[in-house]
Image (cartoon, rainbow, N blue to C red; front, side):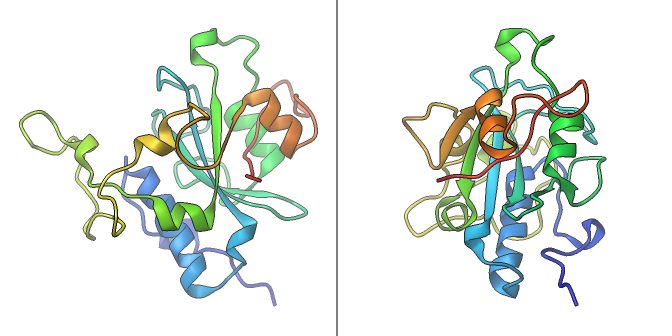
Length: 200
């Protein structure tokens, strides 16, 4: 009998516009329930220098999107904000959610920071200050649980969203390098291309 890696989409911990925390909760579920070895899971932040990235098949448009990826013979993407299936095959996600950059202006080209799930769980911290307006009010209602922090840090979200490979955690890829490494080609079977990733 196959055990689910994570709950169904409807049963996952989810707060709109707090995607990095939603993904942290998915990884935490796997760690606590031991549904898979953490070394097989990777978190992917999709962003760029302008922090404005095009993504398709999303419930709402927003950049700096993290998703979770399971490294298996048939790699799967777990994206709670996608309208695609949950999970979705990496190749399908590449074709329909990421697509080709051939018709996208260079300033909107995507980069992919691939972080091992265990590293993400150990290091990620967010005091949610990025979700407050200048008057202190919330841009969007926060999760009901306490902010995620570590003993050393209250806020390091920028270390994951920033696509400078010299800082932060994991490995940063361009779209083509990402696809070449994790799918084996720089174009998908359809007219679109792209995917999710893994870190060394």
